[in-house]
Image 1 (cartoon, rainbow, N blue to C red):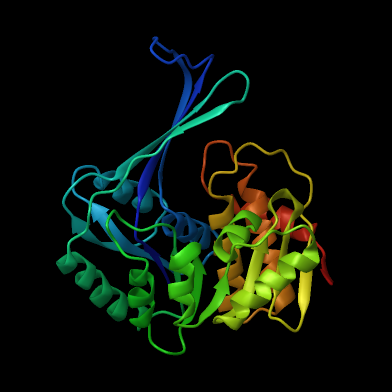
Image 2 (cartoon, rainbow, N blue to C red):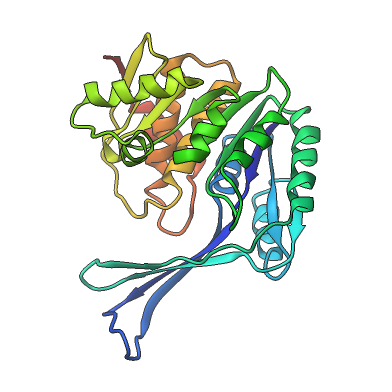
Amino acid sequence: MILCICLSPCIDVNMEVDSLSVGKSNKILNKRIYFTGKAINSARGLKRLGADAYATGFMYEDNGKLFEQELHYESVPYKFVWCKGRVRENYKFVDNKSMLTEVDDISPEVSEEKKAELIDLVRTLSAKSEAVVLSGGIAKGMEPSYYGEVLSAVPAGVKKIVDTSGDRLFEALKCGVDIIKPNLQELQSTLKIKVNSKEDALLGCRELLRRGAKYVLLSLGKEGAILTDGNKNYYCKSINVAMNSTIGAGDAMIAAATFALARGGSMEDILRCGVAGGTAAVTMPDNITFRREKYDEVLDGLEVHEI
């Protein structure tokens, strides 16, 4: 089983408008609603690859049942720690000039009792797991150290995959992590560095390896990704596809890379699968992960090179 832990679920409401005028009435041309959260997205991707995925984390009473419906539809089993309040809603407006305006909500606070309940649940579920994915943000008022507390509940020998940044990432690395997946922006902001070349990027990756990562999977967006363990460095360029939405692409990359890692794949396998997942996801206009058929098609066209 691969356990996916979501600490901050959200509902993304994406709206296309002809124009966005402050103080005036605006007409929506198209609207898409996604019940999301980075680890929940990865659980869906893993399930589509045929993995035994399981979702857990915090969920909220007012509108959390909608997530249960989505996971049931995807045949992803789950068990959440239910909290008072409402899942946060993020609003994204795109006008006819492709200008994006975002209004991001904040999640309700989680009580100390509920935090402890989730750690106990993670301890129980991860004991039955071969890998654990922990990704995304944290609830209002929660300290970055909670990332470390959650990972500390995972038994030795269970693979840990983390996708976050900043202090949350540093706290996770104290526990030892098999794969982390920053993108270039996250690498720069986390380490407070400027990346102008692949050499700069690899230097930053080595710092994260020194802090406790086994592999760094560095996402380069439409250019593909780099995977390094500090001794060997591999690059996989993405292939050209029709890009319909970047929502969930990083989570799809994590899902596919985790799938390869759990099967005992080589560094080349992990990288190639990760890039295939991320690339296949951007072709989906109405979904937040990939179709297996598209993933397989992209995977066949990818090549990995040592750098």
